[in-house]
Length: 304
Figure 1 (cartoon, one colour):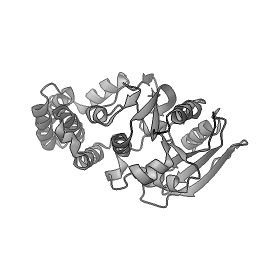
Figure 2 (cartoon, one colour):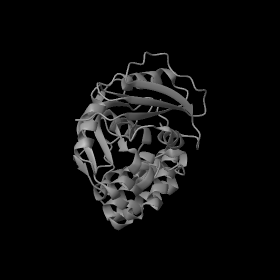
Figure 3 (cartoon, helix red, strand yellow):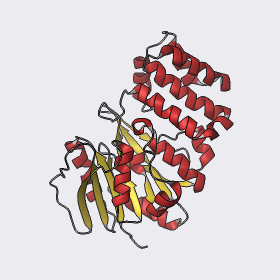
Figure 4 (cartoon, helix red, strand yellow):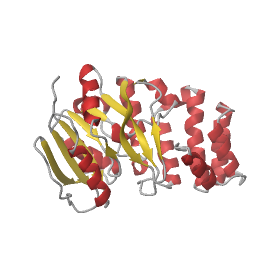
């Protein structure tokens, strides 16, 4: 099987130690083809780590030329990439050595596929949890019903031509770029099923160092934007209830209690069994602490 070149885009902002580990995990891939690593420095000086770069590997740093934030950083890298296959990696995550080999094998076996993802490990400091994806082939309707959190942006491997010409670049209008990965999954799955290597090929850090950690009202804004952008959510009561409950919980955790209660009741109207909506309502009514709920859920290796 051929081993065509791959470009890996690593957006970063003032996290040199974490970024170095991320970059090293790409340069250390066992993939036999060429790998180009583009580190995109967002609102900070271009400063590449001093690490060895072997044959068939290259490393360069460029400033973010577009909207500040993750979406603009990713798009800057995509537009500067020299390869047809392009992968993304957040600067606080890292890959296992066989990540690209496994995904490129599946991509080449399925020439009509635009995106291949993988499962992951979630690292929370004191504990690590495996996050598989519920299915090996992901369709659009399934993503409306389930975000499939195991499909993380740091696992994505795209055909660049499909991303640029058919799917469209990462949406830079999303508030603070929150939910840009879910948005591109939905847009991709409309055009072609997403394939998954359903074993962990990377580690994702869930900690206070995340760009979005604890920014609850940003979550609410991003999710509301996605709801408006993808009207298909409103065609399925459970899907509509799910995203409304996420907005409700974010509002409740952000202490916008009245808005949280209204959104939670809306979600419960569509699905009376929606537990997240019930939790948001309880927090909005001051019956539960958002911090306690979040900590309990994260202890089980899940996100809220």
